[in-house]
Amino acid sequence: MPAEPERSQAEQDYDNEPEPESNGFADLGLSPAIVKAVLEKGYTKPTPIQAQAIPYVLMGRDLLGTAQTGTGKTAGFTLPMLDILSGSRARARMPRSLILEPTRELALQVAENFIEYGKYLKLTHALVIGGESMSDQKDILMRGVDVLIATPGRLMDMFERGSILLSDVKVLVIDEADRMLDMGFIPDVEKIVSLLPFNRQTLFFSATMAPEIKRLADAFLQNPKLVAVDRAASVATTITEAMVLVAEMDKREALRRLIRSEDVQNALIFCNRKKDVDILYKSLGKHGFSVGALHGDMAQPVRFATLEKFKAGELRLLCCSDVAARGIDIGGLSHVFNFDAPHHSEDYVHRIGRTGRAGREGRAFTLATPEDKQNVDAIEKLIGHPIPRIAIDGLDEAEWAEGDGRRRGRGRAAPKKDAKPERPPAKEKRERPERKDRPERAERPAKPVEIVAAPPPEPVREMPVREMPMREMPVEMPMAAEPAPRRERERDRDRDRDRDRDRPRRDDRKDDRRDRRDRDDLGPRVMGFGDEIPAFMLIAARKRAPISEDVTQTEELEC
Image 1 (cartoon, rainbow, N blue to C red):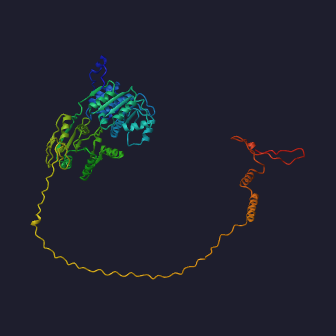
Image 2 (image 1 turned 30 degrees about the vertical axis):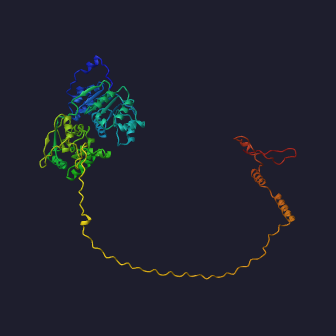
Image 3 (image 1 turned 135 degrees about the vertical axis):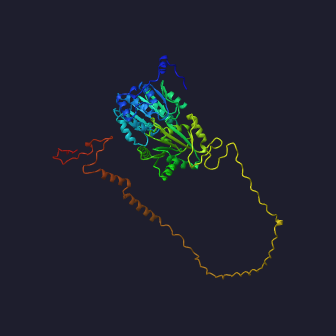
């Protein structure tokens, strides 16, 4: 990593200034139209990340923000962007700001926030995400947009087709940067950043800030202001955690008893695999629960429709994969159930962070099997405290597996890598009695062999020889005819020569046909030289009948 340049004393003093304190959104420097929209939504006091980030964004500084999920990071960059962009208008195909999101669901939620917070401002926005019509998105961009919310893959497709220009972007926001790294979008993000103007404002927001993300931010940001409300990957204090240790075969029954015992208004149920999401969705449906399914293999319209039903209260439970664990805001979510302990400890923070948002209370339960000991240890190490254990009436509490707690599969345990598999003992061969100990078999009497004499051969019948009469051949053979006399041969040759002389030759016949073809009523044609022949030379003039003996008149030709 390149060394940081030396900073002046003024810049150091600027960074050492105390954080701005605020009791309301009006004190943060936002315009009255934005403050009015925020108050109408029911927010009166900004969260810590909003109170610290909004003033620096309004100053035009680059920002690197880290905060636990559910603390209002989206409004931390949405509100000041609306204030910055309210002064001018965008041109066709040239958005004035760009927000990159890792998933379509996050992009859709950010668009909803812009609609709610900017309803008193005449600003336009566009969504460039997969699963939607590209021609419709192109038509919106042609009219000009102030805010462009996009996923990296679809944005690169639109740029390569020439449907969008990024030379007028003033503000860039990279949301959920750690999720971008996990999903492999960093190469696309780097290419998109290279297409933006150098004189821009860049904002980084993420729930966790890994060292890789920090090094990436150093390449994109210029003298950024670091805003860290709480240490990375911590759980909000409004969430009550609990863990149930059960056997693998009892997980579904334990989940059903938890749902019935808790006052569940609406809940997300997370599974590690998409296959398990479908299986659990069918199981809960058979037991009479109002449940839906959501994972990445579903069609985009189906995902949107299911999520909207869940937000509207038509579905009480939603079985989902980690596609719904990042940034999706569902108002008043009361419970989160981890049907599977997540393999990555950071996913635990994102999953349970869907509840207990905006100061509300939330409850999170995790179902763990004895093989999940390693994953649970990593989670507790990350969040900095142990997860309380609870027991369910009617179900036996399992114990942690011996050893490292790695999952061995549902069948027999796999052998250790260092130990060689033991060979099964060889089967003992059955001793057979020796031949001499066997009872002697009774000798069978030999069958008499009957010798049959062969019949004598039949005598060969002799065919009678019949004498054929010989044909008498003539003694004298007729001789060949004598050649014709010489005089007759000469006469025939002279006759043939005279006949050939009178017959017209083939070349003469061709010339006669050619002459007849070239002649017409007006006489022979005129031959010209060159590629083009004048029209007046194509037809020859012919003489008319003499008017007098000395004067002739030529007929005028009609061209």
